[in-house]
Amino acid sequence: QVQLVQSGGGLVQPGGSLRLSCAASGGIFFGYTMAWYRQVPGKQRELVASITSRDDINYADSVRGRFTISRDNNRITVYLQMNSLKPEDSAVYYCGAIPFRGNVPTAWGQGTQVTVSS
Image (cartoon, rainbow, N blue to C red):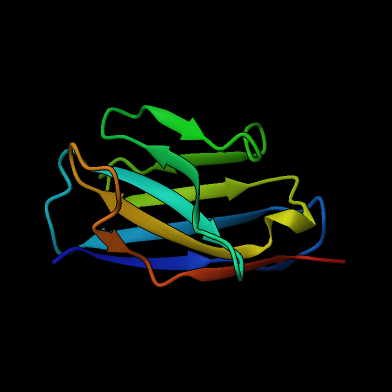
């Protein structure tokens, strides 16, 4: 069974940077798209960024130019580098694994809090 374990996150001042990591194990990830989502209380979870198995990348308009998604050479760890952070980026961030031809993650990380505040 696919398992995703996240690390990173925390408290940062506006304009600062953080990096999130998501390590996958327990399955075959050929063809998977890896994605980062975020959620604030009372709102739906929203897609922040995604990277396909062919390294096609997509960003939400709100983070484009500030966030960078990447994956390591063995393709089982995905990162989200977040720069120029704003208070509105504060949320719980989740990584998700979307199988080939799927639309939604079938596995989720445990979530990590990102708080941007002075």
